[in-house]
Every structure is written in C-alpha cells, then in structure tokens.
Image (cartoon, rainbow, N blue to C red):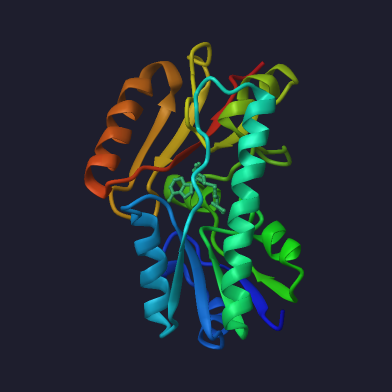
Length: 241
Ligand SMILES: C[S@@+](CC[C@H](N)C(=O)[O-])C[C@H]1O[C@@H](n2cnc3c(N)ncnc32)[C@H](O)[C@@H]1O
C-alpha cells in the first residue's frame, strides 16, 4: 500500500485546531472518518474541521458492535475485537483504493482513550501524530482549576474502573467514558463536571457530589436536548483525610 497517514488531534472542534494541525491538514489529499449510525453529529464536527481547511472528507460506515448490556468481560472483549477488525478492514480498503496522504481526524488528543494510533500502526503504513486539545484540558480551563493539588498526582480513568481505582487508593481522578457511572458513596467528594465542552449544549457543574448530583443529571439532559448528543467527564477529589 502506498498511502501515508497523519493522525491529527483537532480538539473539540474547528476552534481548537492548532496552526500545526491546520498546516498538516491542508497538505493531506483527503481525510477519513467513520459514520456511526444514520445520524452522527460528531461526524458533522469532523466535516466542519475538514471543510475549514479545504480537505475532502471520505466517510466509511462504522461496523456495528455488539453492545448487549449482559456481556461479561470475555463477551465484551470479543465484541470489541470483532468490531475493531471490521473497522481496520474498512480503513484499509479506502487507503488501498486512494493511496496518497490521508488525515485521520481524532477527537481531542490521540493519546487519550482513542484507538486511532493503534489502528494506523496496524495498517502498516507510515504515520505521524500531532496533538490536539483534550477534554480534560478543556474541563480544567472552564472550571479554572489545576487538575491536581500542588505537587500531587492526577489519575485518569474510566467510569468502568472508578470503584476499583478508588479501592486501590486513588483520591484525585479524571473520569472519562462515563456511561453507566454511579456516584453512590461519593457524596462527600468534590466534583468538577462538564458536558459537551467546546460544543453545542456545553454544561458545567461543580460542588460536593451529594449536593450537585441532581443538578448534573439535569445538565446532562439539557446538553443532550440542545446538541442531540452528550459526552461528559469529571474530576473527582476525595475529602481531606
Ligand atoms: C473516546 S474518549 C476520547 C477522548 C479524546 N481523545 C480527548 O482527548 O479528550 C471520549 C470521552 O472523552 C470525554 N469527552 C470527549 N469530548 C468531550 C466533550 N466535548 N465534553 C465532555 N467530555 C468529553 C468523555 O468522557 C467521552 O466519553
């Protein structure tokens, strides 16, 4: 295959595209993105990014993934592996047909909960990576906070792992991929929460979990109603020991 891939983080939308990414994008022959479902508002954001820099966006339909709630760990991992292999094949088909230099437009930064770098490597084509503004950065900026206390660590994790990470001693966590998150038991912790940061329907809530959990639910609903989609994350910090 004679294609080259550039993995480009574009932040949360056209306003976050760095000069470095803009210049790389303008030098690409086309950009490639997946469409999830019939309506994909996040694809619209990628369209806006590509259009702002005069690059054609080639869209492939994302293969369906088994999202049955009853899947155990093995079933979940098998479903992800099947879906991933199908996505890899779809990308390979486009690169083989078109060749040239292709941009993979990555939401936020490619280093955080994103499979694009791995996918590009597995395609076996030359690739480079340019960073973008990530959701935790925008969260911190909006709340005007530092993600950790002076000289202390911050642990970045997913809702799925929240309880085991806290049981292992983590007290200051950025939690992403929040589907199914349950904050029961964290009433005395402090939360800085944000949804749809940098996009339509942006929402922010901060406070003691016990006091603001209802407000967060309402804000999540409002974000979804305004934008047609919702993505959220939060910083969660334990009370002083
Ligand atoms: C697949 S990960 C991608 C993260 C991305 N690579 C980054 O650098 O932020 C998606 C998760 O990031 C968070 N996220 C991404 N964009 C967001 C946004 N605009 N507002 C709030 N959370 C966001 C949510 O937790 C979401 O479940």
